[in-house]
Length: 324
Image 1 (cartoon, rainbow, N blue to C red):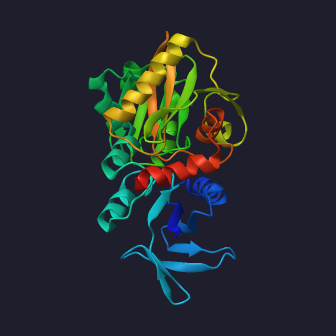
Image 2 (tube, rainbow, N blue to C red):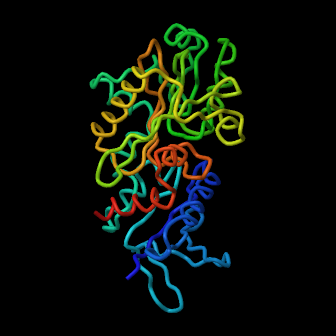
Image 3 (cartoon, one colour):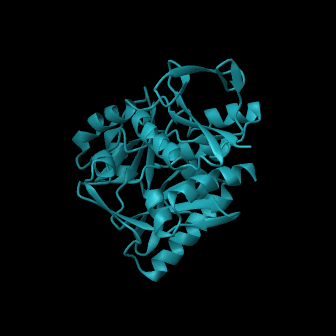
């Protein structure tokens, strides 16, 4: 008998539309001979199943079920394709755990921790994970521009602490530009992280559980045509994503071992994609994404295909591992 799979997509953040694209690619490639697939759209206003004719059917949030033709449909597994809240920050992970429904991304604590850049970096420092010098700021606190510059230097990056897809991020060259950059970051989150500029090669490392083994995928080098790897570089073709990365064997070994260590230390599962910058051959961690983009153009699917893993197998493996 086919297993019922809910592919959740959308979410409450600025990444809503990107998540819809990811979810539709998963829907396209998952094996319909094995699974009965249901696209579930999650928004602040409503949760609903979207059928092939774009008809909407409400989700019963009390048990995460839908009713079709007088029959109640329950799900064997949830494929999580939501970037940002509530799918990447632990909210839905906790909800599904309470309902005892398996889902493909990491557990709720790990999701909340990795989604919070400040907490993630603090948790990993005792394990020898290197990262940029940082300065924290919360909404409503006084902005000490000179104190920020003294701490992180210029140029620096101003980021929303809990946001993805480079929403709310700015590269700042002058002290006078800090206020506008901080205001921009606060449009995405009420917490901000300001980091020193690291000058080096940026790489993205996918780590997944595949055939029961923690697997590091071929590494991708990021070469942005813009000043940094911003939204336009990520999604509007204004960058080169080179897989495998043009890095030395020493760099490859170091970042592979570090990405795998982070995955295991944090107790992650499912798909992850970690971003690093090399400084004198040493990888510095930028962030860890636990529901990375899954379109054909996204980095992790590119890495999987470079490893000889077709999208049908990649997406199917997430369900297999979750139900194992």
